[in-house]
Image (cartoon, rainbow over all chains, first blue to last red; front, side):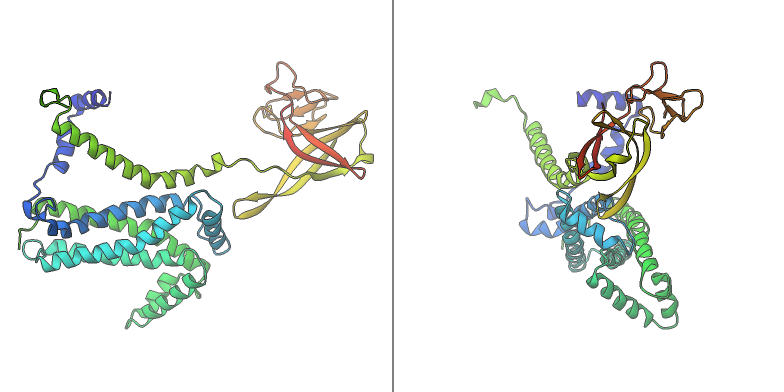
Length: 223
Length: 165
Ligand code: FES
């Protein structure tokens, strides 16, 4: 049945080359854990992506219950955590995934560094990777405020204080992120917008660039 | 299985196992999220409280309009709900009808049109109902006005949920 639907579409639109391009590529022996178990270090990039997918999905579902407003934010998080079936699990996925993604990304970076995979011709991909790293940190920072509890509030106060110490632009930077005179309603709305629209958008673009470059340049050679 | 009796090729076997394992993992990942999203559908509606509507003595044969205000649980929010009710006495019985038109939900009113005395009239598409809430043939509504279950405590009328008649 599925095969026949596929054939029907393929006959008209020739979709096979589309996914063949993505799926068919060489996996060199030195990155295949089936050949050398130590090659599992090459999995961290993929694992980072996997956790990112979980983050995006669980985040989408969390916004069904969450409201970015100082009166209701905490209440809505409390409600989805304690009243909604599986709400606690989905929030836990997003909560722990946020940390796991950083760990995986860090391990991936170590692997790239120690195998020298960042060298010519892959310098640009390293640069994009570092940008992804910063976007991820930004996502962590902005997401931290959203539950609007004591920890979230004071962590953000401190983060904004730190930003203010940047020479020359520090003060404007703080106001820009804070959105108002105090850390409050406008800050929360801003952080929410940055967390769910701006940074994920940037992240998807950077990830696309990251992956296209790997496919163009192939996986770096063995040590 | 004997050597000659291969019905499943190596490649097919791999496809099946990988799709199976992959599907299982994807399902494990998505199940909590989907279950969370559909929770409002599976959550049984809470048993409503009985709310004070009117004193029994105030009621006569003529339907009177009353606004019922009550606090409704709305997730993390308590919201004030207002329902319009027409209530009258029918012997010892109390009839409390919801003023929500069963066509598309406008609010009906008793004798709302001079052309139709002794009837509930809906201005939106000219729906008509008899005094007991029965919809009049030939007008848009397809069922009678919903009726509230009620209770009399200390000479006052309390109403619960409205149900289709
Ligand atoms: S909504 Fe009342 S007649 Fe259509």
